[in-house]
Length: 372
Image 1 (cartoon, rainbow, N blue to C red):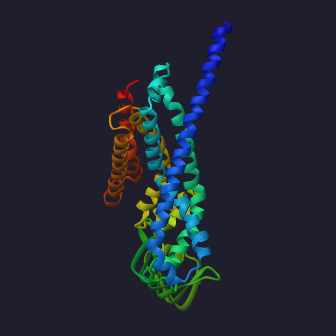
Image 2 (image 1 turned 180 degrees about the vertical axis):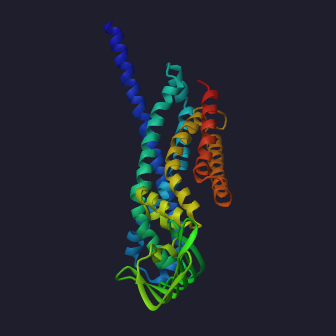
Image 3 (image 1 turned 45 degrees about the vertical axis):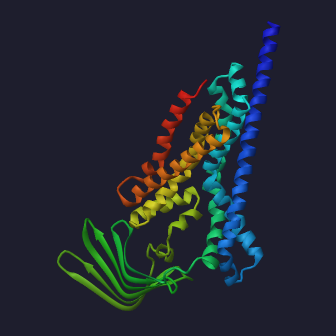
């Protein structure tokens, strides 16, 4: 009994050492590879934007602390699933080439037990990615995007035309044009409905936003109120009023949602659904990607172990080539599915999760056919 107990204790000790060995290999290889690629990306980014920096006469301090310090977590998190995948294939294939995997499996360890430290590490990195993507990176994106808009990107068009928008239930606005720089809209109309019947209509030659009082000022306005058998008309030179509308509603772009944490993003999407804005699909895609991308880390890790644990001719080079092919396939599936969501009636939730669903089946198949 004592010998058996001692043997079990030794086995557990060996298992723990093995788990820590894999976890250290996994994390160190991943952080080294992602750091290396980020350095390369930053070098290329500097070479591309150096003219913008010089033209804007922005200080080196601002470039480092306002831009690149916020650039690193954004792009690191964006590419982390793929570099986790490549990292796992690399060090697992090296272990297979050195016959370490064969020795581990011949010792009696099952393939599912071999997967355990890999999956644990993947869950850790996926959780880290989820926290970064939903709570930390949105805050850092504010400074990064502000910097880009101020010093790098060309100015957006000052005027947008033919605005149709639902601002709340049974309330619609129309503007012939809106000047973003001056916060002035021209040929403004606000319509209120009740049971699909027009109840009132407010028109103005132009509308201006008062940034101090957070109100809209209507100039040369006409209010028409419709009753069953009569119509009431009110006219005036100026009217200050509260409308469920802000200048930000006319300056929204895809990058705005990148500055919102998950709570704010959910509220924003609900408000945008009521208003019926054209970019609602992009916002929903961004929301679902924040969950799907971290989850893909676990799937791609299992696929990477299944591929890398085989000892094949050509060694790690062949397995890395296969890994790169699969990673590009994942990116292609993601691009195709999101394109369907933006250009057809495919739901954003489905479009974002299609690559993960497909690769779950690939992972199951590879695990089944992997030599045990």
